[in-house]
Image (cartoon, rainbow, N blue to C red; front, top):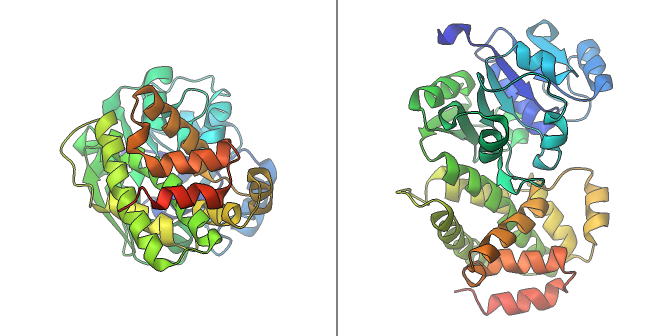
Length: 333
């Protein structure tokens, strides 16, 4: 049965491109939805994405490309979404087909702004997909290193262990190691939160803080992440596992991290708007910061998340990063 499952990837960015590459290590063909018709025409002619991971070469006959989301949904059994969370709902609004009978995995590290929900909960509440058919594909893993075929690790989470293993088997290769998890809520929140902490790490770097402070910031961040996730969905989990601590570290320290890059620009004096314009890429942590702050505010737990609060004050209240971080240093240990 598993051999007959058809996979569709949704999103034409770097992570979507990397996922298509991983799947084609194990499949003869993959459906691929991207909204840019010009990018599709380019891939069909040149064999690689014109905008992201240009070094990845595709055999065009293995790709079912379309800018019609319904076409790829209809042609796929397993749907992997890699559309930035800020644009997910606008793309899903184009659907005329039901997703209820599909297996849906999210490779999105963020909150859906329109609903304030993590992606799995959004699909469950607004598209009627049962939780046993929803999963998460998370790191620590940068698309750029997948393109270079550097050894990387993925965690595949789903309430249904068989579905988690099925997806894991389809993305693993000589350079991709996989493990499965049943903590779908925790891994997805961790993937969202680590982007906020990466922005904090970037701000600190932009302000001139050194490696010693960065280590303290990250050690406090993983404890803050645990408090946050336990408050939202308490279960037995090892917060030091790769899906949590590992993903936090690579996003906080890597030069490939767009959230760290965004924070670095903010620390150097850029406005949010100017930083986003210069990057020309989506920093998921910007949107996640507001959602995480509001969620903790509702639960009256802001005092337990000083790093999230600091980033929120800088990004959304236009507070001086230098002054905010001076206060933050007094709350870390």
